[in-house]
Image 1 (cartoon, rainbow, N blue to C red):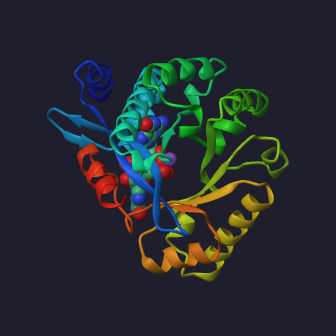
Image 2 (image 1 turned 135 degrees about the vertical axis):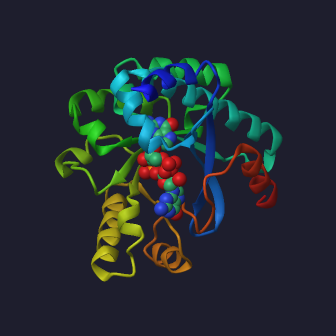
Image 3 (image 1 turned 90 degrees about the vertical axis):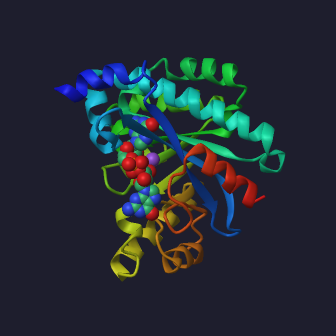
Amino acid sequence: LQIQTDLRWAMEREEFQLYYQPIIELSTGKIAGFEALLRWEHPQKGFISPAEFIPVAEETGIIVALGEWVLREACRQLHVWKEKFISHSSLMMSVNLSSQQFTADLSQRIDQILRETHVLGRELKLEITETAIMADPQLAIATLNELKRREIKICIDDFGTGYCSLGYLHQFPVDILKIDRSFVNQMQASDKREIVRVIVELAESLRMDAIAEGIETKEQYFLLAQLNCKYGQGYFFSKPLHPNEAEQWLIGTR
Ligand code: G
Ligand code: G
Ligand code: NA
């Protein structure tokens, strides 16, 4: 496959770029951080969606090196912004992890990156899917505990779409449940709204926070705030932004 070959070269050719989507604290409307989202600008084909190339990067194992680049770049950018905008001192950076990055040596790799980029563990949030965690729950518990010792925040991504055993959930040192977009964008339907309510209450009873993704309307925002969902992100607030645009956002929202 051409895309496989191109992916191998793309890192050296510096064709990857991170975009940043603001994460909002719903009770105040203030920015709490960003989610880093990978973009690939192919020299001939233009922008290729991560939905298309991440699976290929996973099949070929390229995701491990690529994922490490993402972590380093996101941390580097966070540090730059914290130095530049001291009024945003509590800003956090969220990074997506592929299941293949979720290995026993993950925390040592991250230690190295945090040292290099002068970022603190508590400023970093990792987004992991239910599927990645449930692939090997015992390994997951050990790895998550290592991350927790460093005060790194753990978020279960796309919560509600995979299978996360409730029996395990309370054993995982998880900080945040991210409510999948598919529930959020149909919140005007009462059954979907109930699912969102149940996830927010589940998070609360497990002493976790909830974040909603894919908020596109003011109605969704108000409903989520009413349900005491702590954080949110989505096109209603902002699409994922080029770093320069993200900076403008920080300037405008101090
Ligand atoms: O940004 P966009 O909606 O096009 O992303 C599509 C999918 O790709 C999302 O599910 C997102 O989680 C995933 N994705 C984006 N950036 C990264 C990344 O840096 N690492 C991993 N593993 N997945 C990512
Ligand atoms: O599941 P995950 O958080 O990895 O998905 C992030 C992806 O969702 C990003 O690629 C981003 O472009 C996309 N996205 C972000 N906000 C919205 C939104 O409000 N609506 C829709 N449909 N997609 C969104
Ligand atoms: Na995510």
